[in-house]
Amino acid sequence: MPKTKQIKEERDNLYEEIARHCDWLHIARYLKNEAKSALKYFHAHKLLNIKKNLDVFLEYLVFLNQQNCQRIEVLEEWKELKRELNNSVSYFYDWDNVSKIKLLSIQNKIETNTYEIITLMQGIKWCLILTIDEFCNASPTRVDILHYNIWKKTKKEVK
Figure 1 (cartoon, rainbow, N blue to C red):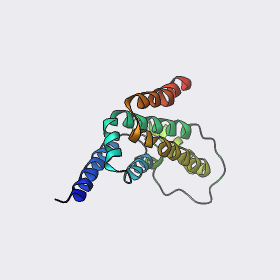
Figure 2: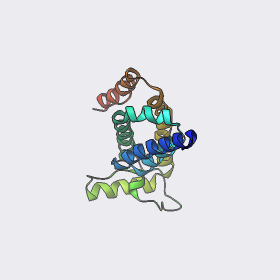
Figure 3: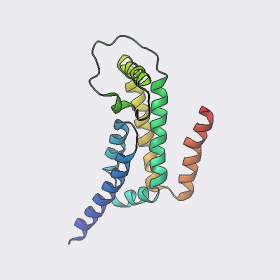
Figure 4: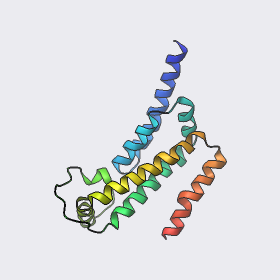
């Protein structure tokens, strides 16, 4: 098998493995899609580094999802919509263990806060794109620093 074909196959296998792990997470679907879309363009050596830090990377995606969900929960009504959102709640919010009453409240917030939802999604995507490269190039020390400074520190501030 030619060397380039072997490299492409190795890269595709790494991508599929990481994407499969992303799919198993209970996070908003748009966040899964964004993570997998960003990873599609990485070379094998970057994907290999992400695989080495896979647990921390997946924990980071869960953290971004928590930030996303918390911000949706506190949205205030902005204005009446001229059109309804056609997407399901699960595209924006991971609602696995949420009561039906809270789910209806979240659905209402999503449907009545289009501008804020789009802004929130862009912010979460920005954080993902900005930091995903760290998982490709980072030494274990840098990953630990990222891990502590971003989400461990934020969890303490939220409490």
